Image (cartoon, rainbow, N blue to C red; front, side):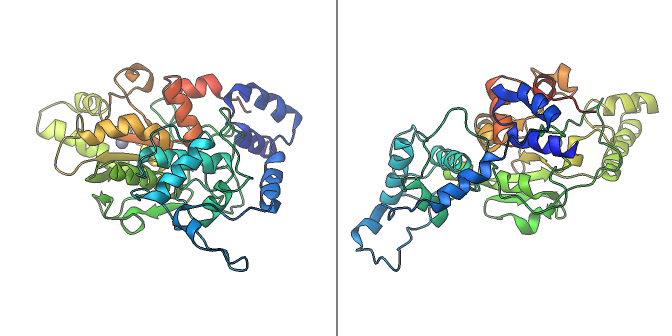
Length: 365
Ligand SMILES: [Zn+2]
């Protein structure tokens, strides 16, 4: 079963073909075997000298190729204009060529990287710019060949615990608790891992899955490039034990301060605090994103995330509209990382995670 689930995972991105996953799983077809070939071919294709900003004025020394400057969110100037017009020619960038590396440019770079099999970090370093300005650069395709969005970490088991066997995001909710024996994959301590000039981590020992934290930082850097700052993370990974503490504390508050009976207090607590084992925070791929000292709902940070989170692989998990399906009241601050392709599809088709998995999931024994 692990061979077919790996195929299904790599193959998933092209959603229109999702039905074939079941077929290929059943037949054990190596549907993803063409992907490494594409990368090898690109590596073998000789690339002409990059045409890139001020580098053009320098006479190139053939034995010592001059690398263009690394460009990232917040950069400005002619090099950014060249980058934008190249991305525009290839179909990745549609906005104005203004020389400002903001969220639109970042999205275009990440899309280019994803479709060209480079780690989608949104940074235009030597690898990205060399390919981008070469004849081997693939133009934008609407239904992209699925490519990995991040460099794979070598692990004995390819499937991450927060993914289902078919590669879809694992659902954890009131009726589908965390699987027994769940173990996190690759937790990092956010305080030391994250750039403190971009985001404040409210509690010192907050941890989360590395893949999700990397995507979070890319997203928040784009927000900062758009002038939206002052970010805080109030919660990320939680153990079942910690969730039990949170739950019990709230029950006791209702009993001691509001005079409720224990059963009424539990009932009231369940409206806002998940039972231990049923919180998505156990996965380490969710963040409560806030602004220090203010109520998050209605802030400009809230509005920016609501609009842009999808472009960085995040979903706004609990909305008023879907509360009867998710079982949670709307939470403006709770975002879950699911990866770019899943997030974009959920946004486009207006599906919450439960609906998405219902529609596109493959049943495994
Ligand atoms: Zn949350």
